[in-house]
Each structure stands twice: as structure tokens, then as C-alpha cells.
Image (cartoon, rainbow, N blue to C red):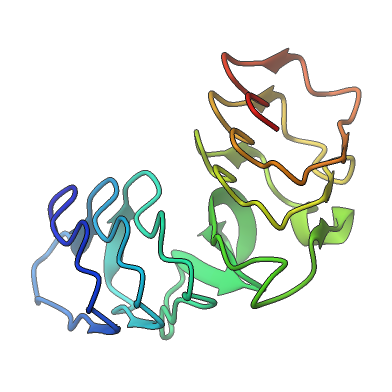
Length: 174
């Protein structure tokens, strides 16, 4: 699915993507479902190989993405992770329903314990996230560009000593 393919499809409520049978697996591009305000159910094949930047940005009713038996991706409590050897090592996207429709506004250290990388803009406009504890993510050294941009309710973010750099607009408008 190419970048911005379904952008603004306000009536789209369900997505079921089947495996293509291609050798390299399926790909979902950047902002593929951006602003699909009615999207509430997503089922993706376990053969999905790549997720672009914020594929579900603006999908405010979406609380979970079902990756089937994937060993590459999972969604846990409204957060999409990339997996390495079964561990959640990459935080790809915090769904905007986190803290409102699913989970709490407090993202606990144990939720992020194995995270080594956070994708740029991963928490962008997650307006119900109020606290983030990154102290358990001991492999995390960079807060990427626009990571927490627009998190207007964010009142507390605890970084560990191992975080060496906060990139441009890391906490802009938060």
C-alpha cells in the first residue's frame, strides 16, 4: 500500500489485508491511512514486512491493529512495535486513541523496557498521553524528530541517562 493511499477516507471503518504471496512480504507506506476518522478495525497479514511512518495517523477511533501471528510486528495497548527475536525493540506508532479509548495516558517504563529505537513522530498528536517513562528503555539513546510533537497533555517525561540526544522538535507543542 503506497504512502497516503487511503488518506482522508472518512467512511473507511475496516481494513483486512491478505498476504500477497510475494517473496518479500507486504509494505504499508508513510501515512497510508492518514485521517481515516472512522477506521476502527485493522487486520494485517503476518507476512507484513514494512510499516512506514505513522501509517494510522489521525485514525482516532483505532485502538488496536491485529498482525495475526507476525514475528515482525505487534500492537500492545495502543502502541505498535517492531519485534526482534520476540522483543518489542522499535516503537513505530502510538495510536492516537491511547489514553482515551484504550489504555491509560501514562506509558509505563515496563511497556518500553526493550525499546532501542523510537520512530520519528511516533507519539505525534497523542493528546491523551500525559506521562511517559523511558527509564526502562536502556538501549534508547535518541529521542527522534517530532517524537512527542503536539502531545498537548504531556506533563511529565522521564528520560534515562543513556539518552544522549533529543532531535529537532522532539517535544514541540507539548
